[in-house]
Image (tube, rainbow, N blue to C red; front, side, top):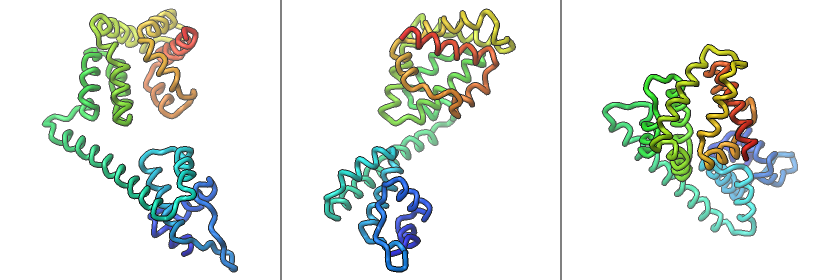
Length: 249
C-alpha cells in the first residue's frame, strides 16, 4: 500500500507518517521502481502501535524503547502488544468517564470540583477568604492536581498536606495577606526580599525538592502566564524565593 492508504488505514495524516520516519519511530519501507514507498501489513501495525503509545502518554524516547523490544517478535506477538495498549487506553477512558459522571452529578459545580476529593479538601483548608492571591494560588494548585496522573495526584496531595496542618494554615494566610499588600508595590520595595525569605522558610522540605526538581525554564508558557497575573513586586518575590531555595539546598 502507498503512504496515503497507510495513513487512512491507521487514522493519521501522511505528514505524521513522514514525521515518524524522520524521528526513526517508523522505518523506511522498500521503494518501488517508480520511487514510491511500498508499505506492508507490519508497517500498518507498527504505525498503529506508535499512535496508541503516544495517545496513552508515552514520550518519544519511551516509545522507541517499546518498539526496540518489539524487534524480533513475530506479527502475532506485536498484535497482542497492540491489543494490550488499547485495553489500557480503554481502562483509562473508563476512569475519566467515571470521574466526569461524578462531576455531572454534583448539584453545584465549583472550580475545585475538577480536583480529586482529597486535593479539594486540602485546598479548602489552605484557602484564605478574601485574598486575591490565595484564590489564584488555589486555581493553580487545582490545575496542577487535575492534569496529573492518578498516582501523581496522590503525590501532589501529600506534598500539600503539611501546609494544611494547624499553625501552618494561619501562617499561610498571613503570607497571602502580605502578598496582596504588594499588588501596587515596586519590585525594589524592601518588603519583597523579606517576604521571599519567609515564603522559602514556610515551604516543607519535600515540597522544595519537588519544586526545584521540576522547575521549568524561565519563559516557559505556564510560568509566563502565571507572572502575567502577578504585580511586578509579587513576581519578584517568587524569583527571589527560588534563589533562596536553591541556596538552602
